[in-house]
Length: 212
Image (cartoon, rainbow, N blue to C red; front, side):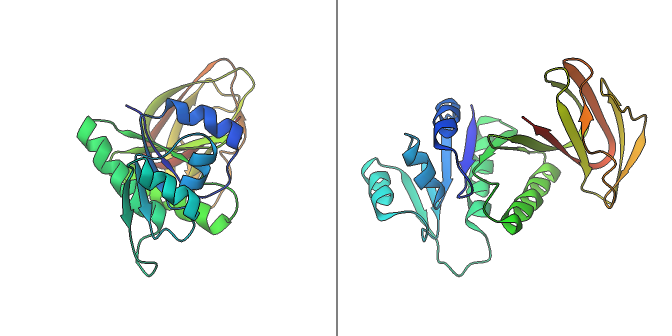
């Protein structure tokens, strides 16, 4: 079951209409519902203070029987934080560990940095938030993972902990229990030698970024 959260960041409607077709359970954080509606999809759950959703789309959601949770504007959590909390509940219920996150880049860099912080919080709880937009895919890794992509594609590894110990296979610049530091860009812009690379994060937390 593919569970996704759609935030109110930058959005490509044509690309979005394709990716949302693959989603089984869609949660929209406030104005993310505008993006969904314009891409031909309404959420299963709409959540937030609802100060960004248009009255027209809100009416569509109400008429379609979407579950709507309205919160006050003055609250400790962001709308996306609330949406991810509901996504975690749904993922736990169906036994999923991956949650897809769309519309969470662009517009404001402070929001993007806050979203990466949320990704780290969920990684520490055992969930993988896969943040995707038309130009990137990113997630946080601890442990071992095989990644399939095309020869020559770039990949960046960014330490989110003070340091991370990493081994890689199948990349142009190999690491053998190499140390990536939080204050150094050493892991940027590596390149696939073939169609598969293996990344093992022995300790620490690493943000994997795949430009498309």
